[in-house]
Image 1: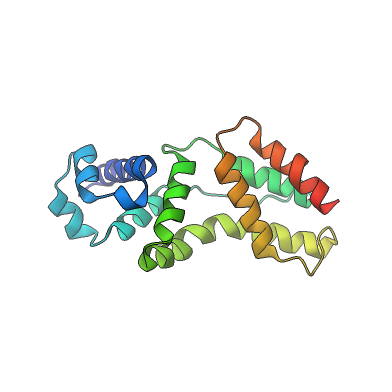
Image 2: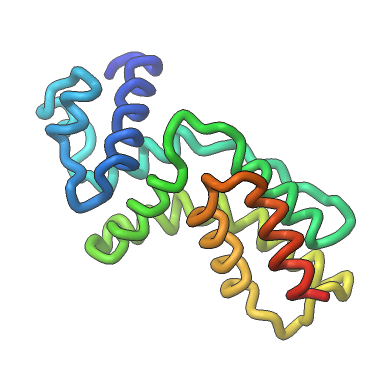
Length: 177
């Protein structure tokens, strides 16, 4: 794992295993086997599965631009389309694994909040704040609940065709009027 290419191979194995088996069944043996690495070398570098998973996610975090499409609905459409760009791992499986693990492991919760959640919520938070300033959304609207609803719906239905348009046109537009 001395080279960036080798580390990326290990991280790819981590995310594939994690998406396949979830947090409870995820272990260093599975990763070592898939990555053709020694379990000892994994533990030497990552003392916990939470740290290994989050480091793998950080290394594969997309660079997400902040769109300004002129309306909240179109900003959300652009944001979610960027989330839907092809990834080298099963995004829904990874997010479901994070949800599962967050019920069991406080370290995972802390690491996830610091390194993963912020990446995905920051774009939506900017879009919500901009929409509130334009008067598209009520200033009383709870942005955290709205963002959780949008992210959860996207993750749970991300495999569906035209899911982004369904969320924006079938849920968000009627909701905000």
